[in-house]
Image 1 (cartoon, rainbow, N blue to C red):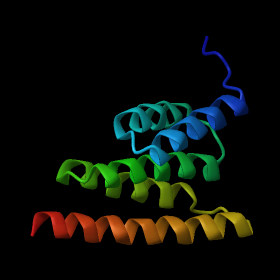
Image 2 (image 1 turned 60 degrees about the vertical axis):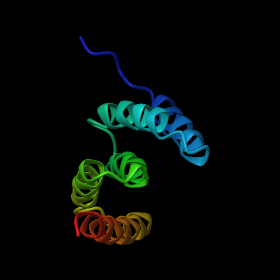
Image 3 (image 1 turned 90 degrees about the vertical axis):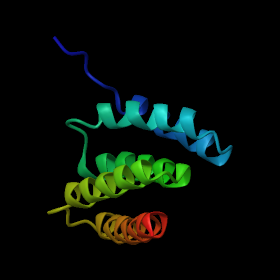
Length: 113
């Protein structure tokens, strides 16, 4: 049987990832984001989107073409995770993810040209 994930565990992982992002420790940040994304199964859509968007932030900051491709993919998943969510917060999150998606696409295009 799979152990139940407590909500604070998800939040803790994203908070630790954010600390590493602020300190520009990309590998450590990516590790905690990966853990958070793995726990996102069954989580509310806004939380899943947040985990994917945070991981995309790390991947974009690392800046390799492979990382940028992965960031775009994560942001696409984050945007679609919010499909059907009707709260005002979800609408704001959708717009933020869309802005981040456009920036990642531009960064990928710049990196490959």
